[in-house]
Image (cartoon, rainbow, N blue to C red):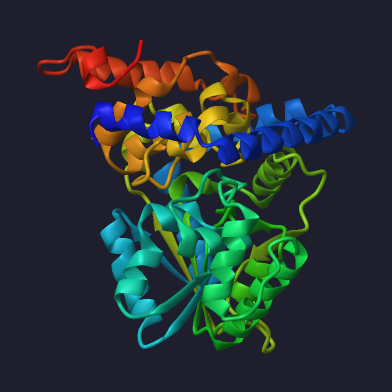
Length: 401
């Protein structure tokens, strides 16, 4: 995608009236919830600052903490793996899935990062996202539009039309609860048919090898407890020293999502005991540019990201174009998504999308970690201009001043 195509993509997204309305509603709702949460828990700011200190310290010890976490997982009866690239992740997952036919997944942007669902589908597996929004995006596209509100771009009319064709039943487009019930009924059968469940992790405590997974639909709990095998894919930046550190992260993520408390926090320490849970637990720790970026003064701060989505809700560009900022090929969106695409994916694509940022700094104000996205994006732009033949893109290249 060249710069002119980036500009056209964002211009088209900005003229999507439904997307604009949905983003307006989601943003206003989020900020009302956040205001209530911050008023109720005035200590939250200090808690977030303490989490930042833990995360900063953990990034300096990323390799060491990952090694400790892997040893803990093995001690608990699980299998631990270190994957440096997406290709290594896919190879490991292929070996674990084996002859298994049905795979159910919890929401995991890290698995999206390595194109895991697409890979397994190409290998002939039945793969189903079990988060309602992710399920719809899987079959309706074009991508997740927000870390939390992934299907915000889909109208109920389009969803009803899809379900009629997918399930072969009559669907009332005005009965949202009925449509949710239909999807849940379909997925409930898949939970029991599944050979493998795949999830991410919001945090992982190295000392106990304990993974924490937040959810609100109970889909992840079913995905990781009913199949015979459970695979956790976790970025190395999610590993922290202790269980106490991980709990603090979970509280900050939950509260900065606008919730007083999440419906479910799953804690996974090992395979089944006393006949409860999966027979096998496999934990894959992913590098994919994280270790290199932890040593980069410009990029290191981005690894503090908790994926709470607060910055996206306050960003004036994201408010207009949603997840289209970042491009349809990238699983990441918004300013922080552009940075993460640079770290883990296509540097060229990320650099082009970096010019959409207004550098206003509202994202930094919203972020519980205080990540200075404008500083990072400004630095990425300078890397273009300071490189061989580097220059500022012009209007003729598709970037509006």
